[in-house]
Image (cartoon, rainbow, N blue to C red):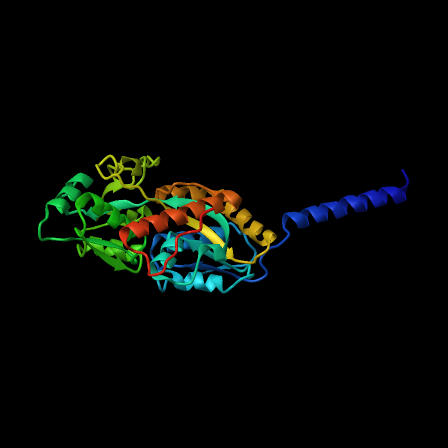
Length: 342
């Protein structure tokens, strides 16, 4: 083999290597990425987004900084409308919760999840029925029996926002207790809800685990049941005597109600496939860290990951489920249309 031919082969191999590297990193952010939270501070979405920001920075997973911004006005409509208006901008992402569905159906705001690009489901979040530590109820059945037996008193249920997940679950509980047994009191975020329950300003809440774990660990709150079909798999003790797995399901307690919430990532519409692929890869790297595993256990999350067509299919099914739940509860805004049949 001649020197010239060897040189050509070497240069060809080098070029292919560069092309391969370019293909593997076809795009990456060229300026700071804005991470929108369509909710207030202290809640589950806020905590997860800020945790992710910290993991990315700690492990240098992205060259550009990630800037977290809360835009929770109008039950999250502020954040969703901003992303809707940022079509084609790959430097803006949003973390979603179920207000992705409940906000447009409950308020009539001109927005649909179809006007964004799905990136990845990071996890599914649980809901727990909580009471103050001084409440006389040790089980969910005791609490619900008290609510049902009350003739004049209406029990106060604290929750995040109106016509959103917490109020939907409250309406589902009223199937068991009887209509109008609860007075639902909306707050700006899960952190505020937990504070109000600690102060005995409400009788109960259905906060996510991560929104009330500090108060539970500190002995200020008591979990009665978890709104899932099976108990949590996390067995490490959170308090001196209890782990997440020790909390019975609501079904075990005579409350046949289940509900889990999306923690997922979307981008604006009109972004390129390689731009979406960058963020899919980024969140895979986040999920591979020991920090993520610890965070999942701390918040008792269902650690489910989904991308691509599977994620899009799941979102479409969840959209229909929320429409049906809100229609039954009477939470739909005037003119809210059912999801188009496939």
